[in-house]
Image 1 (cartoon, helix red, strand yellow):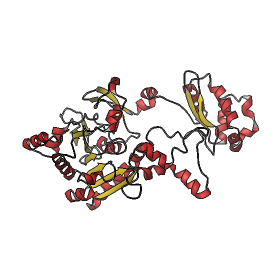
Image 2 (cartoon, rainbow, N blue to C red):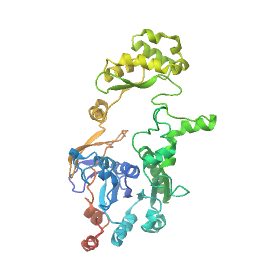
Image 3 (tube, rainbow, N blue to C red):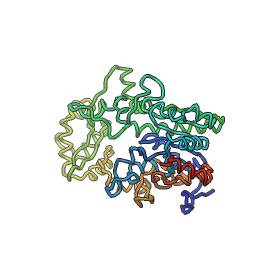
Image 4 (tube, rainbow, N blue to C red):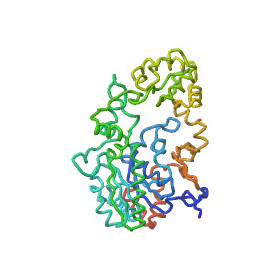
Length: 417
């Protein structure tokens, strides 16, 4: 069975997608929850992103902007998090806007939100209300610390949850303050867990007809990525802290400078065999023949000395050459790439990771796809992210079945902003 992928009827025909027929009311904003609903949108669900101009989603206000020109509809960060969605601009504090929201909730299979704890109740569309409007609905509330408990009212971003979870204490160098992982880390981790949880809830509803409420804490979901450190502490009392790019159980590991301006290659020796292969790939230099380096314990205690020798070997080679030489020898190694390098990466091109889509304001731009391929269909983004309020008429008229008079009254009320 085929269908068209846009509201004009001019898109390409595709086979039925896994979430075809699933309807999502997306009251989320920023990063974690919008990325979660993007999974469903890209894989066939009809996702209506509810947002407003006062204030707009903060990600709409940050770059990178197309051609360096700021604008509500020009942020490619927002674009990457919101492909394949429809935008409904709605003032939820306006009584008419709240009525539209309730109608949208009644239409939906899934309602997802990421406001501060209690905000949906304040707006009159908390779970108890949602459940009355739509008894079989799956409602998802995701916040930093969860909906209950002493810390439930703590509001913030993934940077804050990442710090509280402990990622900042263990990321960086021992002689410098905590540095933290790049960007709002838990915002990037949480959607991978949350999407799977929501799929399980959909399967449960399919089998039983029951909806449910999912209370998702970014802190708790992200702690799964610290499981080895937490288990180690529980078992041995060992407190983990910052050690740069190194490992406590294997050596040498690090990023080594290569020829050219600010060019690097990451190398990770994990076993004695890896070390022997690295030594051979480097031509068995005299310094590397030291018997201390033949076992992990000796390499760990001599890391600085080994790093100096490896750096001398990589200094006159391109990072690509270093990677290829070592990979052929069976040593884990990879070029430290920039965004521009990724756009040219032949493996990503082969996998069709980047998808060029036509955006209503900024034109043809590349969007990132998914980190997996599924046999039987093309699982990339279906269409570009929406402009703010771009699909108001389509959502109200075609999805919610409103009449011209109803839409006019809503517009007159000032709810569509």
